[in-house]
Image (cartoon, rainbow, N blue to C red; front, side, top):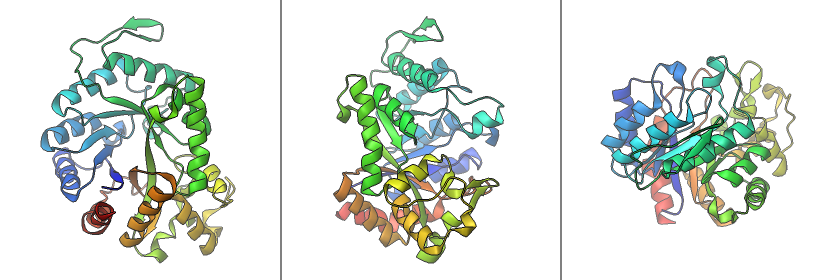
Length: 330
């Protein structure tokens, strides 16, 4: 397939139903599935991933994403190692400072230096080496020979540089416009150079917001609120606006989304992700592959705080029937 495509699946449904849905993603032709790590949902992402690993044959599976505040690094390493035994070569571990899970736990997000230490420790532990966590040296027994890679989810420049410094790869939310992609990549390269690494050592997965529906409906998303006080385009980070600006779409952080003109919203959609019919989405991905070498994306179905646990059935159907076959044909 010209572009590998993963998709976000929320933990908002009973685990047997989620397992069935993830299996349907494999049947639809997706390369991978990332399940978000929200403890307050009452359902654990790693239980979902274990069930899905046993049920599927080819899907890459990962949390999207875990954090080092509510999950201790040694526990994360052991969990990822266990998943690797069930699904060899099909497991990733992804880390971020934390958002809703950390917020619900009443904790601050991880500091950048803290996240760097944890990612470094996880890569060491999963490879059978000793690691230092908060000043304590430890190691893990029974390490699976094929260590899961560790990715950092990054939206802003500093997190992109951190990914370049310490991670196997980066889940990058920077849109699909060539200028935005180049601006974001420049920070990953800067981090890699600082650590004495070759930039091509750092794998890329581009997080792509999606709304696979008619243009008129899809392009209303930038004119909505994610939740009170947070415009849709500011979620999960106001760094979105930085990359839109790199694409020539200037929107202030304190904007009222309802006051964006339809024309400006449409421009934001074209730069930000996939907002339109399935045929358009397929062509947009092929263009990003041709223009910027994008070869791996993560569908992030558009939602509000109230709809974030809805299963992305429309995206899966569109991928199975239109987008996937078009990407396979090149």
